[in-house]
Length: 198
Picture 1 (tube, rainbow, N blue to C red):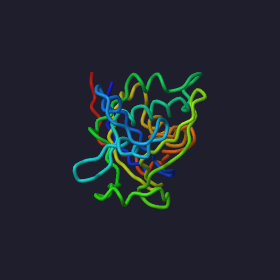
Picture 2 (picture 1 turned 45 degrees about the vertical axis):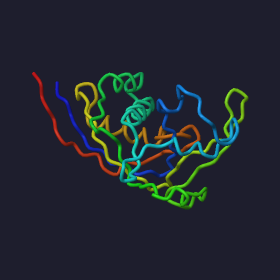
Picture 3 (picture 1 turned 45 degrees about the horizontal axis):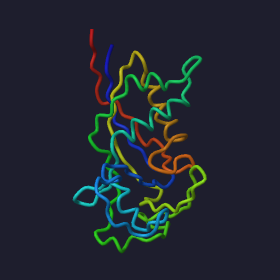
Picture 4 (picture 1 turned 120 degrees about the vertical axis):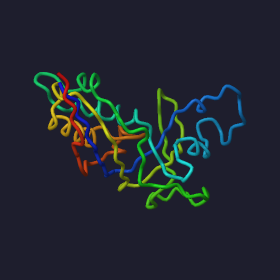
């Protein structure tokens, strides 16, 4: 048995929509709301995570879920790789940093989707209820690098690379994945380390 560690660099080929769900999303104490029910133009301000320097990032579970979902499209005999990925995959990176920074002046962020960072506004319908959703978004061309580790007697290197490719082509990251947002391509897949165990 051996554990393989790889560094993967990806590049977005579709916009990435942020929809961070945190404990602040459902506050313990009621606060004054802006907008109206189902249409809050200030909603996007709670939809993303950012460093003190303004660099946007994603939680590591986004990558884990994305690769697990991508593995459903990667054949493995009579089934798919998804159960094996769920059992062995580890995301080593603490945070998934993007090559995008939010402007210090929030008033510079508009709904213009030709900009690098913009506010995506779209109607959504769930169980017959229609709402307007406001999400921070970054245009295609976003990039990030992360490190994963897995057990290679269950998944070999080429299979893991195929899983990453399938995750980018069929799953994606962020919000709006079912309508094709957050899709990416693999820029590099580099084996960093292999630890063998008897």
